[in-house]
Length: 158
Ligand SMILES: [Zn+2]
Image (cartoon, rainbow, N blue to C red; front, side):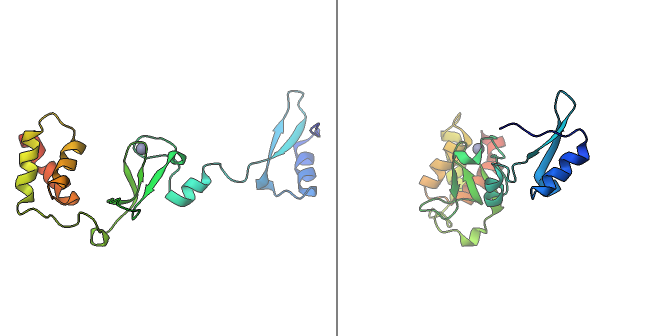
């Protein structure tokens, strides 16, 4: 279909209005010959549904599009500190989840979680933070405790 062109910008805008477009629904452009024409603009950014749902379209940690996959807090067996986590990098984002509302791993089942964390850091020298925290959780330390204790002791022990 040939795009109708206009010699002045205002004519292109008027024509668009006649066709039922609001001014924010069109983009008025000039072609190489200097004639004006309008194009309806995409009303919704393709990522807009992601922004609506998650507040962001890309993972704040790895910049992967969240179309890639998102884990929502509360999904079976998934425990998060924030509302969502990125499937590409495991990074959590979104609203902070109240720890009281968490189910799994809320309470440490070991007598001395701090000692367990310290021990794991020493035992697992060279392992990533994630691996150490995972090992602590497996040993009965609550996720939140494992994280804070890891943060506290890593510099000294790691
Ligand atoms: Zn990510």
